[in-house]
Amino acid sequence: MTFVPRMIPSASRFGANASERRLYSALGGITDRSDWVVFHSLVVRQHLDKLMGEADFVVAVPGKGLVVVEAKAPSAVSYRDGVWTLDGVPSPHKSPLEQIDGAARSIRSYLRREGVIDGDEPFARLVWFTSIGRHHFGGRAPSDLTFFEWELAWADDLAHPAATIEKAIDEHLAWHAESAHVDHRPEGVTVEKVERIAAALTRDFDVAADRRDAKRETEQREAEVLAEQRFALELVEANRAVYFDGPAGTGKSHLVAQAAQAAVKRGEKTLLTCWNVVMAERLAAEAKQLRGPLWVADLGAVMLRVAGLDAHPAGADNAWYQDELPRLALAALAGHPERGGYRHVIVDEFQDIAGNPLLLDVLLALAADGVRLRFAGDERQQIMRARAQRVDPFEVAKARIPDLVHVRIRRNCRQAPQLVTKIESIVGRPLGFTGHRLPTGTAGGAERVNVTPGNEVPMLAGVLRLLVQEYGSDGVVVVSPSGSRSTASRIVAGEVDDRAHANDLRWLRANLGDAQGRVRFGSISKLKGIEVDAVVVADVGPDARAWVEEHDLDWDDLLYVALSRAKYRAVVLEAVPTS
Figure 1 (cartoon, rainbow, N blue to C red):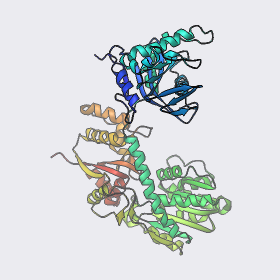
Figure 2: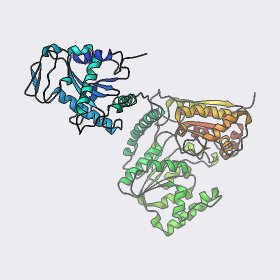
Figure 3: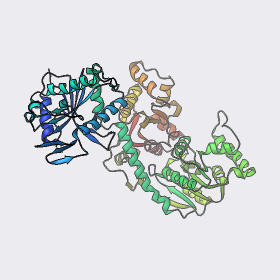
Figure 4: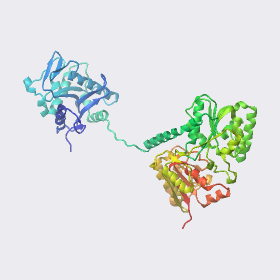
C-alpha cells in the first residue's frame, strides 16, 4: 500500500531548477500523508493578472486547505524597504509572495468557475528558500507587516516537509479565525474534494483516432481530389454548351454542381437537374448552402411544377413519366414561357434522359435565349434501357445542340485503385480510367462470396456486420438487381422466415432501412446516384441474370453501376446451387 502523497506529475518536471528538485524530493518522501495531493510546476494559463503564470507547488491537504509554494534557491537573500533582492538582483515588481498571490487567486477563480470549490476553502502561501538555513535568524525567521514568519520556509525545513506545510496552513487558519470578514471552512476540504481539485487542475485524457476521425480525413482528402478536377470547368468556360463524358467516379457530378454554384454566385437563373431522384437529393445537398436563383430537382419534379401539378398520379407507369408528363410540361411552357427562362441548364446523368426526345424538348424549352448548357453523362449507365434502344448520349445532344463541346474525363477521383482493379476483374472489362488521383496504397478491394440456398440471411448479416464495424451504418448500402423482391426488401417486409438463423434475421430487421443509423438498401437503378464507402451487391445469380436477359439489359453494365457506388469496398453475394 502507498502512504506517500499523490505527486502530479509522478516525476520532477524536465528543466526544473535545483530548489524545485529538492522540494519535490522532500514532499514526495513524506510517508504518512497518502491523502495529500502535490502539484508541481503547475502552469496557470488562465491567469487573472497576466498572460500566464506558474505555481512551483500546490499542496492540497484534506481537512485543512491548500498551500501554494514558491521554491527559491539563491545564495543570498536581501529584503529592504519592501523589495526582495535574490543573488544581488533586486525585484521591486516581482515579490515572490506576490507571485504566489497571483497564482493562488487565479487557481481559486478557476476552481470556482468549474464548480469544484465553494470559495471558502483556505489558501495559504509559502516561500521556501531551499539553499539557506534558518540558523541565520537565530531560530526565528523574519516577518513584517506584509508577510508572516510562517510564510517563509528554509533549507532546514526540507527535513520535515509535512510539518512545514501544516504549520503554514494552521497558522493561516488561526490568524484569520480572528477576522470577522474572512470565512474559512477547512472541514469543507474533504478527500473527495481534493480529488475533484486534482481532476480539474490536471485533466488527463487519452484519445486515439477512431472511425469518425478517419472518415473526416477521408472526406477532406476526397474534397481535395475533386477540387483538382475544377480545371476542366476553367478550360471550357468560354464554351456555351459542354458535355462532360466519363466513367463513374471521375467527378462529373462535382463539376456540374460547381458549374451551378458559379452561375448562382453571378446571380443568373439556374436549373440543376437529373432523372434519378436519389441523385437529385445528393445534388441538392451539395448545393444547399447556395443562396440565389437556383432550382435543384429531379426532372420529374421539374415537369410536375411546370405543369402546375402537385404530385404524380397514384400508380404512375413508365408512359406517364416518359410521354404524358413531358407533353403536359411542354404545353404549360408554351402558354407560360416565364416558367422557364433559365440562363443555365445543367444536367447530371444525362444518359438517363438522352433516349427520349420529349425530355430533351422539355430541357430546351426551359432554357432562355443564349442559354449556357452543362451536361454530364456515362453511356454505360443506361442500365434500364434495352441494349437495342441504347443511344450515344453525346451524339443525341449534339444533333440538337450543334456547338456542344465534348470533354472526356478519365481520371478516377473517387474509388480506391485496388477496388477498381477488382471491379474490372468482376465485370470483365476496363472501366476506362487513364489514372487515379487517390494513392495507389489506399485500402480497398472487392470480392465475390458464394451463397448457397438457405444461407442468404446469415451471409448477408455476416458481411454487413463486418462492413458496418469498419465504415458505420451510413457508409454501407445494399443494392440488388431484384428490386422489391430482393432479400433485404423481403426481410424488412417480414416475408422471410429463417428459424435456423433467427438471430441474424433479427439483426437484419433491426439494422436495414432508410432511418438514421440503419443500412440503406434498394435496387441498383434506384440507388445508382449514390456513393458510399462500401457496397454489398446481393441476389446476384441465375434468376437475376435470366431477368436481365429477358429484358435485353446489359448484365456487366448493371454490375459496373452497382459496384462503382463503392469508394473503398464492395462485396458481391452470388447465389450458387448446392454442390
